[in-house]
Image (cartoon, rainbow, N blue to C red; front, top):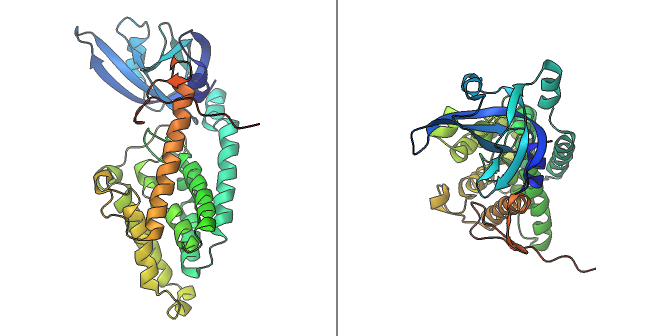
Length: 337
């Protein structure tokens, strides 16, 4: 069973299951009474969860010596409440070589979904008409495809899984294509490129190793964050592109090269929408506003999906609040048939 399967199925009644997961973090803590315990975070290709190892757990000593990144088989009877996944009698063992190889390849459903999303991204990028923006996107894909396909879109709130950034970007591009059909004055080439680059700094801030489902902690991500990293990367690729032979004929293009570069950097800089949320500037163009709302909508929709899958019912059709959503959810209205 995957972690996502467990989150969807576990509830008040214990669910017996075996889960393959990689140890992501281990934090030593103490209870109010002073008893030591461990807080372990596990991840697989679908999701992550945190589990406590209390002082009376028979494998406490073994858990203390586990190396981070170790793939494990967790077995037990699992429950889930507002605090997350739990089990009173669970055990673990390291995976053997064949089990580890199968685990690291990811679950088939996730691989299939992300492969389709990647194909959609490549297809939508091929429709960019501005040769400068298309060249920039092609250069990014050629140099960073592998790293891009490993990145998450966030650390925990949405698409926080290996390849999650691909899912997020693909859905944003599909939304942008639809919105540009409704608002034809929007610059579709610019928005499509902005979607690709808006979170490109997360290739360093929220990335995964080649073999594993534990997000790396990057000094660049911690000290700069993905927006400054994204601006720097887009600038570097842009100036490299201008030095190429293909750029010799771009001097006469309209809008001018510098205007195109500036508007793209503005999309990256302003996509969080508010200074308080980390954007160094506020949206100042129609494309910047559109990108911000497309990004926010897709992030919130993913949070809603995750909340409906894991939240317990407070009353029929009313679910407990899941952070960071602002209130308890209500069962959505069914489609008319």
